Amino acid sequence: MSLVRPEDWVPQGIEELEDRAWEALRETDRSVCVTAGAGAGKTEFLAQKASYLLQTGLCLAPKRILAISFKRDAAETLSARVRKRCPEGQARRFVSLTFDAFAKGLVDQFRMAVPVQYRPPANYEIAFPTNDALNDFLMRAGIHNINAQQLARIIAHVRIGDADQGAPANLQAIFDEYWNDQLHGRPTAYLTFPMINRLAEYLVRANRRIHAAIRMTYPVIFLDEFQDTQRAQFELLTSAFDKDHNTFTAVGDDKQRIMGWAGAMPNGFEVYTQQFDARPISLLLNWRSHTDLVAIQHIVAQSIDPNVEHAVARGEKTVDGHVCAIWDFGSEEEEIEGLAGWIAEQVGDGIPAHELAVLVRNRPERLEKELGPALAELGVPLRNVARNVGSIAIQDLLAEELSELLLPLLRLGAEKRNPAAWSLAQEQLRRLEAISLDDDLGLQRSAARTEALVKSIRAYITSHDPRAANAVGAVALLIEEIGEAVIRRVTPSYTRNADFARVVEGFELLLSECLGDADSWSQALDRFEGRNQVPLMTIHKSKGMEFHTVVFFGLDSNSWWSLTPNKMEEMNSFFVALTRAKQRAFFTNCRDRGGRINWLESLLGAHVPRIASEDIA
Ligand SMILES: Nc1ncnc2c1ncn2[C@@H]1O[C@H](COP(=O)(O)OP(=O)(O)OP(=O)(O)O)[C@@H](O)[C@H]1O
Image 1 (cartoon, rainbow, N blue to C red):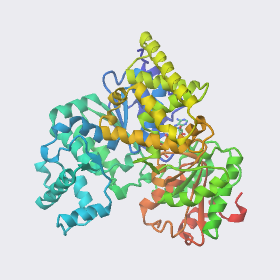
Image 2: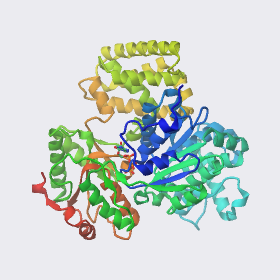
Image 3: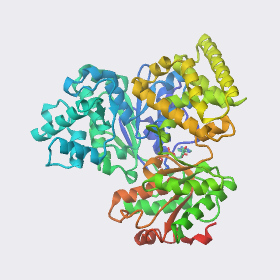
Image 4: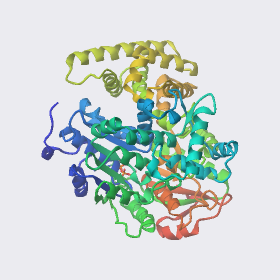
């Protein structure tokens, strides 16, 4: 595989990088800390730096780059960008995972190296305990001197098998009792992600061979959205890696720190810069939004950080009229009807429904119940991306390896010609069989394999109407013909039966739902992928994403009672919502539900006018 000289390397898929981004890209001997505002291209920068390191051989086989993101879809987007730009042999050495997947991968692989007291059985289940479940444990265990939140902190922070950490004996006892309860208290053992983190941290700290292997395999580590890193996650990194063997590139924006409630470090950038002797670099451009929106974003940014530099907008404005406003509604019915009507009009004007996102502070399922039917009546589907199909969220399912493998094959089965699906299917099958692009015989074999698979699924689809009941058969046929064992062998996160079954079940459920009343398989696949559906999500789920237009539902003192000038994290959430928009950001306010947030309106001033519902155009 031929390599490019570093001085000849040019960015791919974008025209240019700003000077400071070039500096951060070429800094390969030392860790860097890249901070920048929204839309600065931080995630894109990581994809470019990965291509640079792989294509120039600065990260040479068998060494790998480990990229850690917070959300499944963010990790997948990053990996897809690298796959698009680098030859397969190089792209395979870019390992893009969430923190949770990274930790779980270590635990599943090295489970037997965990001390017996904490060792989960292979068939453990993942649990997401509520406060009620934690309180229930405290009651059963007769522990009265701590509450559920304190218990959660103990579980997240006590280190396994570390006599030097100085954890008070009573906390250690509670920790051990909780572990015993989760592993042995019921017929099935349960682990939460904070527990998995503790196991992974133990493995890399206490087992010299695992530590050495992981440190050597990943000399380069990328961290996206670093501002939301929790102390326990950072501890896993510092136990696994060090500045003599590994270089980090962390990117993030303190103004977008919205996971403080979940333990994100308040001074993460400072701690990271010190620990890894990182060079701080800040970026200035905003590639996402146009000048008018960036000016409004700057007002909010300044209220979070008075010293923030004014970003330079590089997005192009393509709309007329207001780019940001608060829409005033009298009653909730009027608000739902007004919003649905406006969205339908926009779709009629040619803006794809999936580019019109509706964001809420919390409980999207509540709004889904009201807005969904109102939009459906106007012929526009709404998708709550956080909704679970089986026990996996739609947003996560779409980023699963299984979806990437099956979707292009189903497309080829349903559609006569689809070159994009053909090349995706080929790429997936080459990945399964580890065939490189210079292996002519392998390529022929894989093309023949793809053709055979397409023939089978096409025969199935032709002989089965687009009906819900036919989803399971289509999925089973593809998994059987590709080989379940093959799929699971190359996808570490499918090693355990329960993990693979969960994804298959989610895939089948969503496909049968989409086939429901579809006219064709092709239409059902569009639905599956969320094409031409208005996405509905919380601000947390919208992190890292962008849309033509964003409508935030419920900017009032009742829906967002916690948005006050001294609650920094709430202001950060508002900033995240506002900055997801490429062209326009609107906020709905409904008098029946709650009052105006006057201080915010005065802060935004004339830039963000209030518009009466009848004047919304
Ligand atoms: N150098 C560049 N040239 C042109 N477009 C770019 C460049 N860098 C990023 N973009 C585009 O700008 C948009 C924002 O990029 P990206 O999502 O990487 O920003 P970010 O800093 O991670 O944003 P945020 O923190 O707000 O989530 C994307 O559409 C991306 O494709």
